[in-house]
Image (cartoon, rainbow, N blue to C red; front, side, top):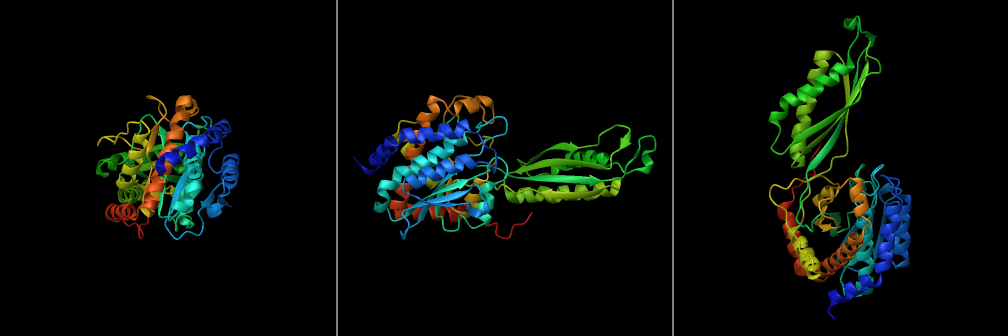
Length: 394
């Protein structure tokens, strides 16, 4: 039995506990920054498996870090666990699988820690769906000593090398002056300012970079139709191929806001959300994962050039260190963020693929930590591919 077969056997030995963790997290969906039970379940099980667990990582109550192989001089490989759920829908993005796969991969390597010149880490990452937990952790230095990272995400196809778009939210509040609707000239219509903001953004949208778009909603617009509203608010998502393009659009929208202030006399206040960066998947790491998932009897695809992609805070991680975010197939043609996907995330197929995903993750980490030439190739690709945004400000 070769080393990878031994790792697979170790994951199989812990199969029931891995699947039980997935079920427990799925049964108690907790939204962003409120994942107390999910985080505690992971911390307890990792501690029982020999990991040294640190709570409240980066100042976040539901973030944590668990280390095995402490004291080794080699690189650190982190498995990233997500476990937040969607309001009302529950685990419609399958984060119960992401968390359990990270746990399964980590404990699959415990017996072999001393055979690798490196360390295995699990980082508990809250609030991927809303709040950018990984970005907060990055800013707090939680990834400063990590050399490589990965996670798997459930989907409708086994897929590697998929990228992701950059995005940022923009909230705009306008303050005007109330008046009776029979004498609108005595007031300053804040709702009109919001409407003109939509019109202005639509007017300049043809100037946006390729593959960029915005979507927006009015969040407040008055209460009764016979009063000129003195307050109105709107929110936009600005999405583009990369952060530089996002900045280009943000600068253009700021010009629109200034123009609206001049036209309507309403005063604007705006706030940018936490920016999610584009994703740079490391092909070398993905090829290793693909090899191991294929060895488990799975067909693994690569994205078509026209594949539409979303955004995730792991994009920010890929700007910091080499990291991958492959997908494992748990269903056929079931869109995520739906109740149907919530059901799929706890299905028999999901459980089977969860175990395969954990095995392939563990094998990927072991191979990288055991092969200095692979490490060098991964780092060279990262250096050549990923832009330096150190001085980038929105």
